[in-house]
Image (cartoon, rainbow, N blue to C red):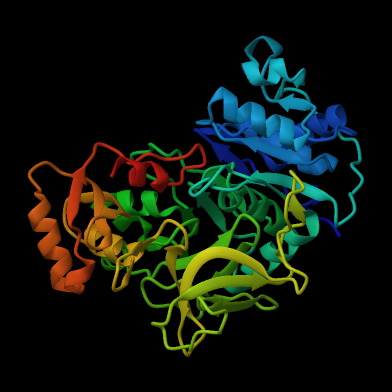
Length: 467
């Protein structure tokens, strides 16, 4: 099995095969640069790469995959302590992409060999294809409800996921993929970058602070980026010529989906998966899903949703339970060796709450541990309240948590990033018009930004502690 057949193909040279931050590499130059990196790191236990987007980063990452050395992307926002932990746990022995004098302190302290990536170095050496079950990447989970864990993802699982997505999205070598997802997340690295090199499409990385996007046929972005694009009407309208718009890595608010539909004439396709499963549930080009739903399982992927008594919930689109997944896209395990990604029957418990409708479409509600407010008489799902808050004009970001209340057990507390002039009562009344009285926030805090982990996940544990 060849994981990246388009990289090794001998077709016509494309001058713009990869573009990052305004710089380009042709397909021939990319292969030469990647092979030069692979020559230098072959045999390493694992290699770390700072995931700050650049051509050097892309070449380093693909070079590791080409060499059959497990790739460990380092989140750019991770502090020295977190980077040091990732380097120790993953077993990385090489840091790719920086000159030795510029290597971060954790890499120096860990004694890692530093191999700079020089785009002027090329190699035509043949790179043998590793075993399909070998680890391709070690990705760290989001860290929303606990310390991030390193997940070992095999070449076989990546190939299976990308082939299934290519079929669902009608993805082929004529596409131009414009993606804004971080290169240290499965959605950005595996689906965006490696997906382009498996299907043969051109790849453009969208800078997170870009004022406008380049022209492409497929746009892959995270919900925060889609929310920003939906507020920039000229940018959003420019996407009407695309073939497909995809959102993944977190649930997308239906209000954002609807704004984009009106501006682009596209119904966004949503995808769902965890680091352990890759994208396992998605909409299809020929079967778009309703706003707020993540689609149906990919062929060969099975899902089950169990209530608190471990009984399957009815497929009514309303009953909530914890989602588990099994299938060919599952990861191999965790680098720390503690626990398994799946039980003896092959099921991975995602920790996410979801519903399933009669047509098999899934709706992701939120995390079981941090996205449920436990009142004395009822449970409130934070995601439902967040969706309504985000639908109000001027609200840019929102997070809902449960905080202690003497009479209610826990109360609904909202943290909101919004335009000046909005009041707590306006937002409370807005929620009350769409949801029940018990789902209205009792407290609303306006903040400049929400706390996020190095992986970009909202750290609700900090909001809960703040009250």
